Image (cartoon, rainbow over all chains, first blue to last red; front, top):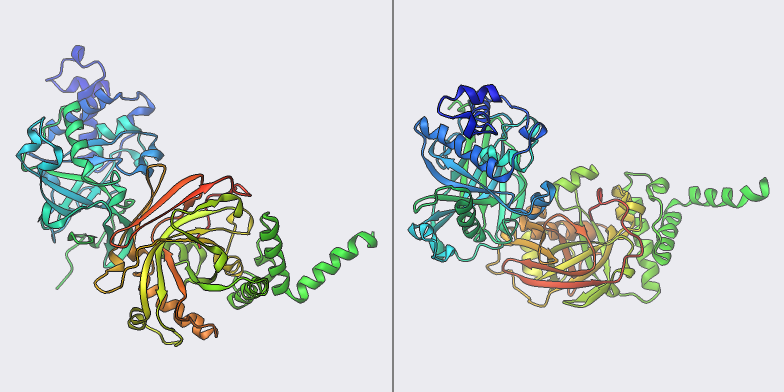
Amino acid sequence: MSTNAAAVASVDPSTDPVGIEGLARALDRAERRSTPIAQFSVERPLDLDSAYAVQRALIARRAARGEHVVGLKLGFTSREKARQMGVDDVIIGALTDAMRVDDGCRVPDDRGIHPRVEPEVAYLLGPSIADPGADPSTAIVAVAPALEVIDSRYRDFRFDLGDVIADDASASAFAVGSWRAADEVGPLENRAVVLELDGRAAATGSTAAILGDPVRAVAAAKRLAREHGLELRGGMVLLAGAATAAVPLPSSGSVAAEASGLGRVVVHVGEEEPR
Amino acid sequence: MSATTTPRRGAAAAAAADPVHAAESLLHAAACARIPCAPVRDLIGDDDQEAAYAVQSLGIARRVAEGARIVGRKIGLTSPAVQAQFGVATPDYGVLLDDMVADDREPLDLDRFLQPRVEAEVAFVLGRDLDSPTTHVADVIRATEFVLPAIEVVDSRIAGWDIRITDTIADNASSGAVVLGTTPRRLDGLDLAGVGMRLDHAGGPVSTGAGSACLGSPVIAVAWLARAVARHGRPLRAGEVVLSGALGPMVDATQGVFHARLDGLGQVRTEFTGHAATTAAATTGGAA
């Protein structure tokens, strides 16, 4: 890792003792080459601040290639998942335009190490999200069902909290269904959610699995973005968290998420079928 | 030598001659003593469902002879994941007796049970008989007077929930108790497949799920049950309560309040007090 850090000319090793840039570079290369790396924590666990510093450096590398941050995502929003990981807080990551897949379109299949997919709820945030004094829930403009493809850049999907934060909370790709006005949809605290693979139910759950009520994701994102230096502005998408356990992304076929009263979002995977 | 082995050999011979009665005796003794027993598949085999239902019927007949009253049925193994785990392609069912039913918010002593677990489901209350072996969802919808949110306490008389399909069927589909909510809803305009379920304990969700987790919809599960029990000569009758199957993963029953919320159906809660007769040795493997 230290050689990698040295290779990034813009970083002065004396001000980057943990090799933040080197770790970001390793994660970036793992993602671009679809080749997993060993989790950092085996050698050297990252504290929260260092882990988010790696994530920022990773996103800066994407930005340098012309990608734009279009949203944020939360991780470990399910109580069971957090307990499994032994963590007591949610984590946050950034979503870029290159990760976005339009509803009904194809997930690029040139990437991914061991991708998994999960059904989520997405919020479209308005300008008041940037106002520290505003009530977080007033920033919700619209809501939609969403699919998130997560993909750890670490071998065997094994990581500790610092590892996964550094890896942009395993963000890989996402798709959002049609937006509906928040007041039209009503409370989302306990809506049935189904993840379908080729029309068959692969996982079922409730939006209650997302922080007890997905609306809490907005306040959590606001707090975490402030604490860890992520930009949060009007027009951004927030993926609130998964309503079911993640399932492996199939190599072909269709993947859909449907939330009761919220609608449906679908993406396709693999080769285009002959017509 | 022969003096000590003869009685055992006699019991073994009796069990071999009538494995169904032997299995029922074993389960009955376990329930009375509140000490779990060995799997009854050792007696009746692990795939003869007819024999297993015969064991169940004997157990129910014994309880009825003792004064219990049949108030409904329960459906188990309604999730594809659980069916796969049991190597079966259909659900199973058991019988609800009057002493299993508890009211919303009524405390339940864990000591009543051996290895209790909790799940949230939709309870159907029938307004008319469903006695045809060709019952379909339209018949179920017409016959349903109302539905209620329910918490089911499942329990196994088999040690460590080490059950296969014949074990759970013989053991009355691993039934324990049912707590019924008090907000009746008619099926008109209700999308049971789209009902979200959350079960909270100690202030946070411990299990979440959806109506479609139950065979696609709880209505489909009840239609399956109506056909199955009509074929077995014990059709569903008006007034019966049908527990249609879990909407999410079951969790261990422990002290404190369990609070189930079914989106659009209301809520129901129960509080467990005391300690279970047997601490669940294994937390995997079981579903009813």
